[in-house]
Length: 146
Image 1 (spheres, rainbow, N blue to C red):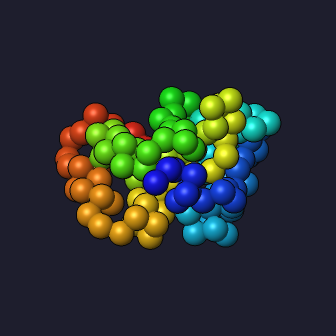
Image 2: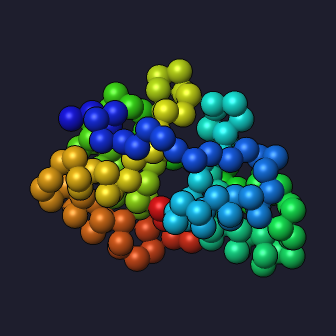
């Protein structure tokens, strides 16, 4: 099974110029904690509710500060034509619960989560990934953890 068979295609986006208030409002409306940040359809970062709290509020930035001031620019991703088992193992290794999905032209085409994988590929793959993600002190301790 390929990532494209399981991913969510319709993803809410924000831009580096959007305010952190707009990003937070979108997250609240969608009940999510993470949004891809794009410039046109190129992925340039991710913003999480944690980014808003630890890089925005904690640093004294107001709600009208731009997303670019708090987003994570070093984003891990996968490709839509990758094998889902390979991506699941990678998610466990890098300890993330969600990955943006790009096509081979590096254009954002969706997002994949452990929930997507669990629904489309029943078995213990998502459980193994979650176990790997949940290990304390991994390579991304303190970074976006999905």
